[in-house]
Length: 299
Image 1 (cartoon, rainbow, N blue to C red):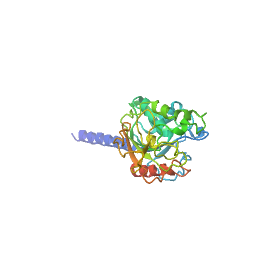
Image 2 (cartoon, rainbow, N blue to C red):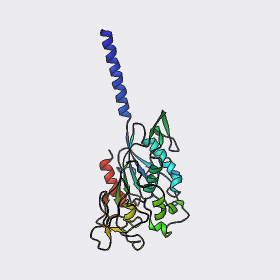
Image 3 (cartoon, rainbow, N blue to C red):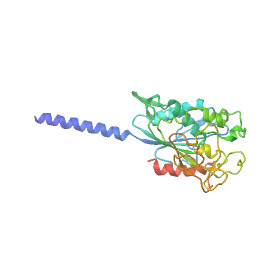
Image 4 (spheres, one colour):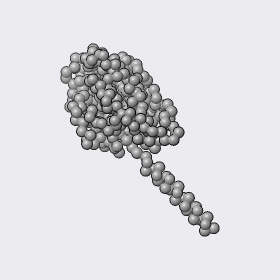
């Protein structure tokens, strides 16, 4: 009788240790997905600790932050594998991810989730090799990725009129993808696999005010940075502009009846017109506003 009790206690303790070990191994990560890069940034692909694109690595940017460095100039379709490798590494098995995207990174992540968010993914160990690929956890797999939410600064999923007019080097395949009609037809923007996108839209745009409709951050107009649905961009502004319909906060339809894509909500609208598109090597512009939100919520 006594021996049976002792064995039961030992078994229970072993089970507790096993459960505790499993819980301890679960980690939340914050993935940062960059935008367009003049000349490309292929040399950083696979290095999840290189934050040169954003600013000082010492700057707080969410729990266990990792930089998903895609090359910033190739086509969205060709670069999706880089994002999938990162998501497999850090957002499978017991681990969960918060994701922060910027500019063309929004288009890239949206494309990846719409096309692969329901696919079978191998569970990985969060230990990447030099190519940014992590080892598998035995033979386990799962459907899609463990993503808590996505924060988006200056989102490009609706494209930019600057790409339409050839304001950037048109030899870069990414520029072709960023044309408004191309970006909007590239994938089903409503299919996020129930992952919510929180949009941060800047409005300190002056240089291209005659080209970008409505309010803009000098690169992305509100129709894109606000996650607004439709076949083409439309003119949307801050409240108080008599000549333009308002981009509304949250998920509600905008003034004039346009709607956002499913699971897209406007978290920040730059009513004071204080934030432009540019990071300036120091977490600047509208990215700075998003970063504060990430720090407060990605724990």
